[in-house]
View 1 (spheres, helix red, strand yellow):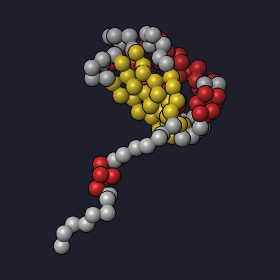
View 2 (cartoon, rainbow, N blue to C red; view 1 turned 90 degrees about the vertical axis):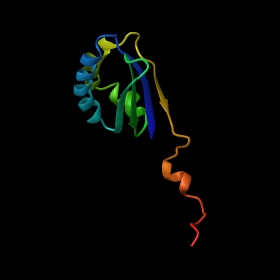
View 3 (cartoon, one colour; view 1 turned 180 degrees about the vertical axis):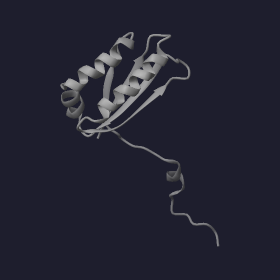
View 4 (tube, rainbow, N blue to C red; view 1 turned 90 degrees about the horizontal axis):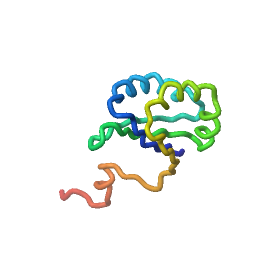
Length: 112
């Protein structure tokens, strides 16, 4: 599994319109082969900046499958007009992770 990471700099004042367009665009990407999940988050400190994280089964599912598809042209038509400047997209593989329960998974037992 790989994670696509993109900081999306939306033109100030167009955030609401961008979010509505993204609501349509997410259905396009969610139907693509190799798509696993996505999240779109809005920055608290810089409200015109969004963080897009998309999980793909393979890098090629994104770079060749999605980007080479007719559906990508629909995605572009819906979203690319909002970006200034155009976002940098990078891909990541997980090295490690933690969850709250991990801190309590040691071998010590409660006293009787």
